[in-house]
Length: 298
Length: 323
Image (cartoon, rainbow over all chains, first blue to last red; front, side):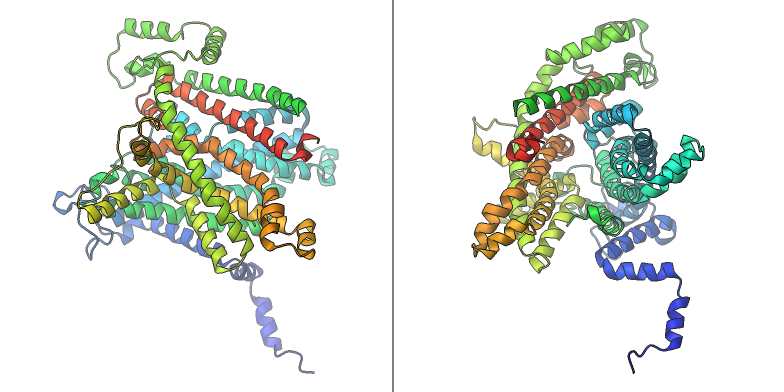
């Protein structure tokens, strides 16, 4: 009757392992690409957090004796037209990109979450009018809306965050609303109402926790988009301003100027943007598959 | 079908009016007013008389409802007023650049379609093989790669390659020539930005083609077609692709509406004097009247494109028309 070789001790060891750790391990096995994305994201967060400790050069100070130094032992990614070390600026740029990415997507999707659930909860005419307003806001492409906001409030990091947050709100509200419509029909919402709870409490305590899946999915999707959008705005000169290190800013200045003298200048910052967005997208796709199989992309 | 189109048109009107309201209040949301900010924003001394003249020119000394009416009327009659920066007529400025941006947009759409449909199809047929993985990585990379960086890489590549081959670096021409004047010069300028925007665009469409086709291939009628011994090629082309094309059409159309956003950065990279560049310049120069007109123009193009997609969809799929 030797059915299995598992001893009592092994079973016990498995029991002792915290369940969330086991769940995480299972998830990594099932979604290796998503886990790789998450790993790269964590790596960028680590770089941004300890930027001062792991770099030796100053990210902003010009150094005219070391301009256009090609990649080598002293400067792994070379230096730019002002003699600044590109690797250092990429590491500090990760801080800008992640700050903008996290703030814009968290604030944008959270406001969208509350608005979307509120719209679904009240329903009827309120919902109808609210949806038409969202339609109107969605008729401006992301970057156009962001540029319009920048044109009013001006450039700089806070305004860039604002400019990216605003167009995210209606996009999240729409997705969350459609899930919240289903939640609204579940009897516990009626039960809460019968108990005489106020609307705010029902919305925040009873409905919001049940639409976390679409919310988290939108949140991760927005992170990649926000980083890309920040890079675009900064590249256009309408986002983060010099001397703050930002990836988009490092690409400014025309490819033709550096093609012969220093082709590494535009290559590494672009690679950093692409890798970060790629990682966020891989993680987001895997998260979507896990949280909501119905939305599966393939 | 006519009833459906009429219904769609009626639904479109409130959206356009809503967009007009937002764009209108955009400029009124500025602290102070446009003229004060424009002339005294940087702390310089501004002549109160000049501000007054500016306010009169823009009509912002009028009551709000008259201003709004003027704005909407101006848009309907294609009279968008003057640029606050150059003083030229905005309608003319847009007219000059419209052709170039439209051509890049159309070429990018063609590039995207030509890449996306075959790649998406192959990827779906060879699901979970190495071909599928390569295509999927290619398309995910397209979404992650900023189109302006791809543009920079294209220029870099062109310069380095031509330097190696001919000895002198070659750059795409800066001056725009209409395609009917000199098609070669025109294409040698615009093919590159179309590629840079088209790649990103194709990524979205490739993923859509793949997933739509995979879904259709699981349908009963495809199994029936296989069961009666039809050639696989015929099943894919006649039965599956035809039905999978519906969502793909939507994505391609939607992305076309979003192209204006993509052009904003690409035109900057390739130094093209199109609408995107005009937009960026107007924001940089605080040229509020031009910004306002362009934002409104983009919204109208977007809403109209959506309308066309809806009609096309209903025309392609009778189930929607009669629902």
